[in-house]
Amino acid sequence: MTDLLDVQAMARWIQRDGAENILRGMAGYVEDDYRRWERFDKTPRVASHTPFGVIELMPTSDGELYSFKFVNGHPMNPARGFQTVTAFGALADVDNGYPIFLAEMTLLTALRTAATSAMAAKHLARPDARVSAMIGSGSQSEFQALAFRAVLGIEDLRIFDVDPAAMEKMRRNLEPLGFRIHHAASAGEAVEGADIVTTCTADKQLATILTEDMVTPGMHLNAIGGDCPGKTELAPGVLDLGPVFVEFTPQTRIEGEIQQKPADFPVTELWEVIAGRAKGRTSAEQVTIFDSVGFAISDFSGLRYARDANRGTELMGDVDLVANPNDPKDLFSLISVFSPVG
Image (spheres, rainbow, N blue to C red):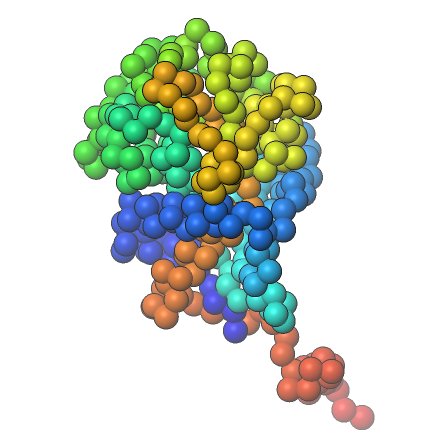
């Protein structure tokens, strides 16, 4: 049998252990896996683009475990009553190729994305960062806020979304948890006085959410909305204001903010900073930019953490996913008992 963590079990796990505890632990798993980045197979995700959105496969392996995620991105979905992003994923044993863990990854992707953002900010933002701005109040926003509090202790949020109902939803979800939230009338107002600015909008377009004049010395920019060709959030000039850090350069050049720049535009892969191979922030006044599109190693980390946290508990189910005849050479034996006789 293959272990299974379905949607209800995932939600119950988050309720049981607490989102911030999980985000803190998952950020540690992501950091550990980034530190051993060179052990992993790495490839840009395989994407099928249509006018409606994109469906992607995101695989990787560290030589002992293999993982993949199936994920969609359909920005027009909410207007039709569907979620923008849904996903599921699996871990497999490299030794025999058998899938050993299957999980929903819509909630898990929100967790691992937020955990990666907070982990990156831990290495790139100013240590005294206390105010966070969030441009975009969609499905990812609450998870981002919780992750920054879990890892960095930030409770002051300045938020803006073109949809007032989305901002109200974010306020309704987070204020009871102790966050201090300022509803801004514009993106420019939202970033005033912010130490960390996260852009997480969903529209599939070359948008300009943040311009050069909105960026002040010492800011850390966490650009997580761009995740496919033709979709950006930062004005090109913003990328010239400080060093740009990415997950996997070949993928980010296709999908990230740096798709707006020449192919030789300099970037630093985040794992190099974590492993001590490259410098992160070098001064309090420096602007740092994390151009994040999401990468398979973060999914690998999220799946590992979810499996380890729930192994042997009542939340872990199982699914009969692998055909397993008594004689491994006799697959037909599984159906022969149902065949008519005579």
